[in-house]
Length: 343
Image (tube, rainbow, N blue to C red; front, side):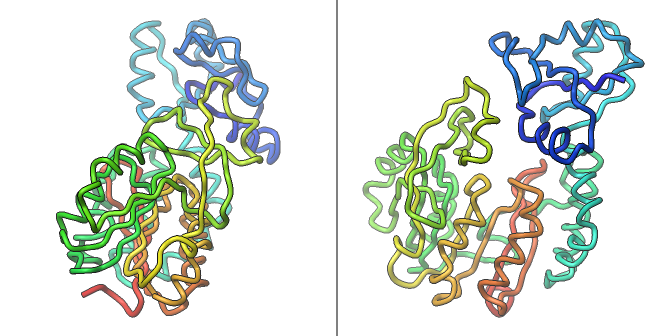
């Protein structure tokens, strides 16, 4: 049976599940609509046009799709080539299946760390929705990430907020709307975005834009800016899995412990998978100020386990909560509040 992979960049998945762990057979090829990728290789697997898949015998195909809209893609293919593909699996389903299989007890233990029934229930239901490859996460959806929600209310006068992953300033605007007198430190590693933010808030004496990524050390890293919405750090372990056409640039990183002086009241991190390192680089502030934490965990399944544990390692007195802030699969946040819900 051929295993065919459709769309996207599968390098890390192929390396982990086909090479290292040998849980899946080696894929026959990767399909992509982008002609410029045809003939390129992903972790040693050649990229082919969809027409090659269309020529295969339907009964012999197992198709794994990486796109966020897999069934839309397959509907288009079925209409175009007049074939009905029987075995279609999404990449997320495979990843979630193996993750739950290997971490069932750990996931149960983490769910029991959360303080309220809503957190426990939504944490478990979130993984069920992932396993179903659902596009509807409204059953676990809560409005307003980071503040102005049922855990952290309106920001207060003079509260110092650190928000890393400032991007286009949407959440900085939300913070100022919550309280125009809050003090906002926004961190954005992508230089063009940081420059725009600096110009945008140049007349705001209580908004400070830092053109750095938060990390556990002061250094320079490569990151992938080929996807406008994110600044994904590419470290030495995965740089060989990056497609040749991806746009890598350099960013400066800092520890929050070295950058913000004075008491910090809230730390919100959405740093494209570097949350664990950013937390470790904030440990002195967390120990000293016991700020409220709002930490994104959706960039890696492993973060749903590791980040709650890391937070309690940094401060065992924190009370943990889980909220999901998107009708899609992104924007899961673990909250930590010293002593319980914020009043």
